[in-house]
Image (cartoon, rainbow, N blue to C red):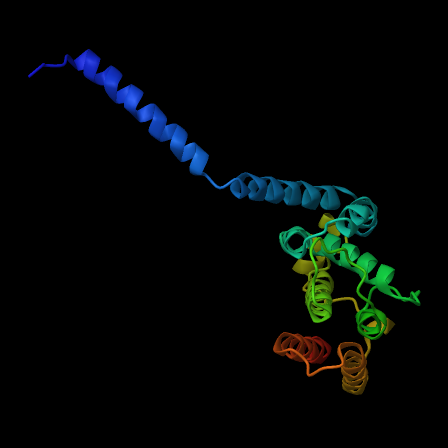
Length: 232
């Protein structure tokens, strides 16, 4: 039996380890790099919103740049990845507001508010691009998902004073200031019930079939979110 020296053994071990390392690198999912890049981008966008004296203005400018890119994303999962990983709720609000405003046949001049989000429910249509053939109900399912996301993000923007500068925000938090509401944030439970009822009627005409469970669940969730937000 041939006896290998320590040096030779080390060389063999090293050369044997190299293919394994290469194989492992090849097996690493390519999406992991894309995910890290996405998270890094979101962190940079969040910083870009906050460095300005007016986060509200800076978020509008950034949303203007991102909006055409969002419209041209042809896959739902990619749109969701962009919107769900956003660290800035204010920027997410602006981007979703632009998307829904774009999808309305009759745009509204209302400022971003609960009234405007409720308006989107009654007047939005599905205009997003899809790479593959997608059922009509799935397009509405995505729209409802983003509407709930907009409502939740807006609630955080108001509750956490995110439209104020960082310095002003710290002062407001120390003083335990109440969220600053707009007149258009005053919507009643009756308003919510009527808009939900009208939306369901519109879906009945468009889909012309019993609602898929996913649509029913998202409408129910959206209604509950509206009722919770208006009750606080």
